[in-house]
Length: 167
Image (cartoon, rainbow, N blue to C red; front, side, top):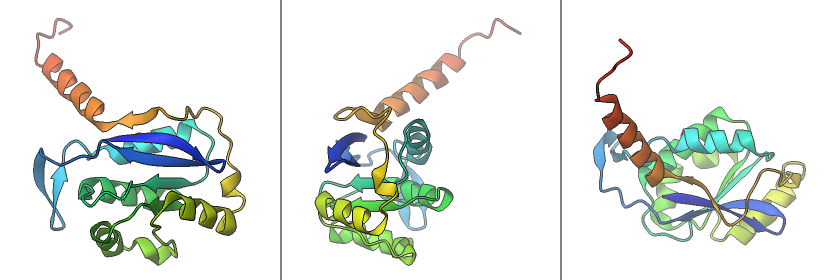
């Protein structure tokens, strides 16, 4: 799963690309399978947010019918820890149900069908946050690749199995 930063009307929107189909499920979390690939998404997004100068998050789910529930749950957990608007666009009914089940709308934030609607809402509702700098943001490139991160973690685990010459 990848997130790519795009500029829509001078607002940063993270487009979800090459979605996770969750083939590597490892257990249940509140009735949903936990996907190993998406389980560290909140840390990766958090690190990206700390390295750029923005005070909001708009994630465009690209009207995908099936979004990995682990991805959504991880992002919603991050939303609870960071004091900034998290807005979802391209939300289909099944995804909207998951967002609602985890109390997304309790903060008064709607989910949008298109990123353009989300950008207009952000500018109208959160004027100051919408004026974020684009410093350190490379548009059109992946901000994170969960698949690459998972492969890296697997590689680190296998290299840890080797002889430890330091001890």
